[in-house]
Image (tube, rainbow, N blue to C red; front, side):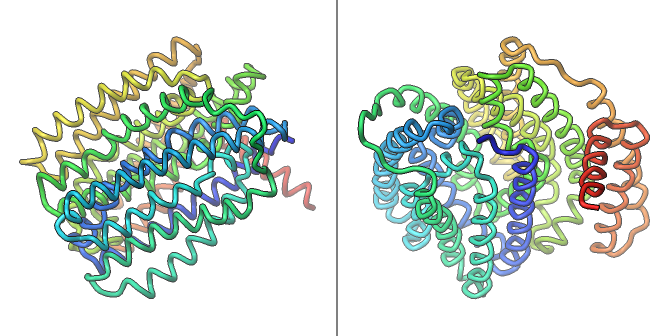
Length: 480
C-alpha cells in the first residue's frame, strides 16, 4: 500500500523541526559550557570517526532506500533484500571498526585523547544496527519521526545532567554517539513488524557492484565535505575548528528547514521514474517550487542576521563565527537545490556514475584551496574551499541530469522567489538601522521579514502558497 505523500511530508516537517530545535537548544547550552576549544576537540574527533561511518555504511543509506522502494509490495522479495543488505552491512561495519580503532591506536589516541576517540568511535560500531534505509524505502516516516523525538528528548536530558563544565567534552561526545545507537536499537526491535531474515536463495553478489559504486561516490563526496575540518585540525587550532563546526551546524539547521519537504521525495521519485513519468516530472517541479519558496529567503535572511544569531545562540566567545556563517550562506542554495536536482534525481534515475567524476573534481579543488587559504584565513579559508567544491560537483551533475532527464525550470516560481526575497531583505536592512537590543532586534527582523516575504508572494500569486491555503481550507471545511 502506497503511503500518503502529504502525510509523509507532514511527518518529515515534524522530524525536520525536531532536527532544528535539538541542535538549536544543545548549541546554546554546549557553546557556553565547552567554549570554542572544547567544541573544536569534539568536532575533530567526530570528523575522524565520520570517515569510518561512511565506510561502514557502504552506500546502503542511498542504495537501500531505492531498492526497498521497488520491492516494498512484495513481502518475499523484501525479506530477501533485507537479509542480503544486512549481511553486507555487517561485513563493511566490521572493516570500518577495525580501521578506526587501529588508526586511533597507531596515533596513540591522537594526543592522548583515548576516551574522546572511543566515545566518538561508538558511532562506527553502532552501524551494525543501521537499517534506516529499510524504513525510508518503506516510507515509514511516522515511525522515524516518533523514534527520533523520543531519542532526542532523552539525549537532551542526559546533556543537561552530565555536561556541566568545560572538561565534560567526552561526556558530550558519548551522548552524541549513544543517541545514534539508540535510534538504531529501536529500528532493530521494530523491524520484525515489516521484515524477517530469509536466507533462502539470497544473492549478495548482485548488490556488490552498485553498492561499491555508491560507496566510492559517497566517500569521495565525504572527502570534500569533511576534509575542511581535517585540514583545519592539522593546519590551524581547536578554536578555528570550533568556529567552523558551529558555523556549519548553523547552516545545516537552515538547510534542514529548506529541505523540510523535499527530503521525503526520493522513494517516490524512484517509484515514479519507473512507473509514472508524468507523475515524476510533476513531483520534480513541485520540489523546485518548494525550494524557491524556502531556500532563497533563508539564505538571504541568514546572511543578514548572522552576527546577531551567533551572539544569541553561542555568546561573544563565538563572535568570529559570524563571518564564517555569512561566507557559508551560498551553500544553502547550492546544497538545497543540489539535493533535489543532483542527489535525489541522480539516485532515482540510477545515474550514480556521474557523481564519481563530479566528486573527484570537487575533492581535488577542495584540498588545493584549503592548503592555500587555511594558513592565512583559517576557518574562513576552509569555507571558501567548501563553497567552491560544492558548486563544482553540483554544476557537473546538474548539466548531466538536464541532458538525461530533460526537465524544465519553473521560471515564474524562481522570479517570484527572487523578487520576494529582495523586498524582504530591504525591509530587514531597514529594521537593522533601529539598533534595538540584540535578542529583540533578531526576533523583530525575522518575524517582520517572514510577514513581508509571505505578503509579497501572495500579491504575486505564488501558485504553491495558494495551493497550500486551499488545502488547509478544505481540511477545515471537512472537519466542520
